[in-house]
Image (tube, rainbow, N blue to C red):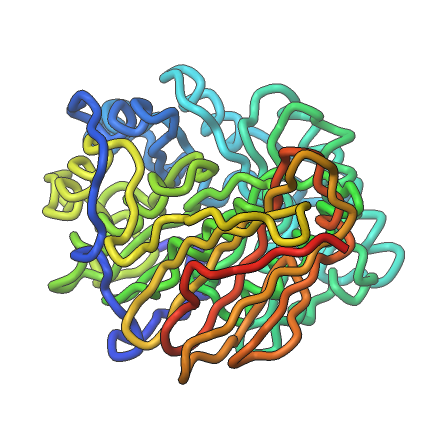
Length: 448
């Protein structure tokens, strides 16, 4: 295993704390079956990719699977800071170019990974701080993005900048200590260097609605409200033997901010649930219209950074595993997937003659996520408030894209600064998560 890969961090969700929801996902709609992952994903306009290493491109089994099965590639390490700028101001793109050319020659998309990260920095960058480090980091973003201008589909501009645990705060790092605006500065530099590439923020342990993913959500929402150029959010999805029941709802709430979502580093510990978890992730992506694709972190189990966990779709000999079949079947099912517990939106007559509210519920045993759409009537709305009464025992635990008053019983939700103005006939969305049973379809909307 590459020593650089071992420096990546993984926090596996404990099986006892996770819920496998694959069995509860129903498929509606079909697509003509294809026989490879990439071709099957392409049927719905998506990609299915793999992270690859330049040092393995001489392995005939490895490249056969790569060229046959995948329509997107991501470099494991070859485009990171230590690889591309080993000495300050002296750039090396040899192995990064190998990954790029391998992908382009096969007609694949290429995801760039990663321009700035607190790990895998060259020694000279680790020795810098303050303004010197900030200037060096922005120059690095500019030079690398410019070198690959027009050839990269999407960049992970910043990787793993938020802390683990319940704070939802930024990770302490030398980059963070240059000033809280370092992520914004990196995205603006990347856009200037390559206006065509999609610009993503990428992180792990964000596989459901939790404090860390909500911290990232709030950053993305802020960026969108201020015009900071961010196009997508990557969810690494290094999973154990269970999956958070709010996985799909989490993808959806980010998509509702107006960004694409991508599964960027998927691998799943081998166990009785591996095939089901892979299928669940695939179906979740298909269910979210702005989920543009899935990348698995490696090809064969023996290529994985996770040692003996056998977390990939092909075994060490290159044979397809049950997890492969589950993904292929899910991709070929196509269309939109939705949990059977979802309550279809019901439109209520506008309250106050100006707006109406509809709710879609994603429910599970003991909790729910509610996505609410606010629609203006024949006149534009310059502010709105939605009210409802929660069932007994229900309590709100989190809200996004709105400000709430109350957490149980009679509750109300008011627009935030960036979504109060809704044009005539237009709509905006907010959401909330809670314990117990979600609200019914009786929501009232009043214009400010």
